[in-house]
Image (cartoon, rainbow, N blue to C red; front, side, top):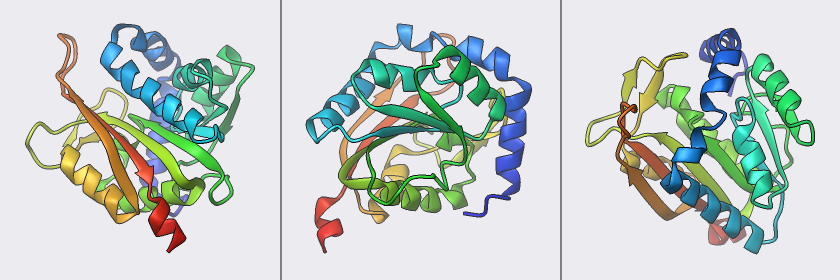
Length: 218
């Protein structure tokens, strides 16, 4: 993926501009989301059981989810486009590693990782870019490695653009997102749809996937 993609620059600039406000808004957001936490806990348990290789949070923002992965026993680090968010993450969680970078071009060797978390970070990618992201996720994950996606689900509609409070984003049908992953040798393990809370606009989707061991061997 071209690192000069205009939407990457626009996304980084938008999050830089609102970094402090955004960090304050999301920092304790998991506290009231038991169903969301359950998917992350299952992801962490599966990664640990499969050998506990390192895990990246791709699009880590201010780092609170990377820290949560650490608290669940994973060797986790974070990558994000926004230098300002990476500064906040490094300040708030100085014991963890955070890097400025694109989740479409991770500075990770082939097959190095046991897991990858994309928690509402793919939402800003134009639909045409998603296959290249899944290809990159497959590259960095070890055969059998786990991928967990958190995203806004389209509730029976097609892929649709909406006015995210930071920068434009997309809602996805869960089946279509799963199909894109399948084309890059990911096998679905589990899915969860959660209806919006009173102060949320959209249904939340969660997909837990695994890089196919058989395809890697073939």
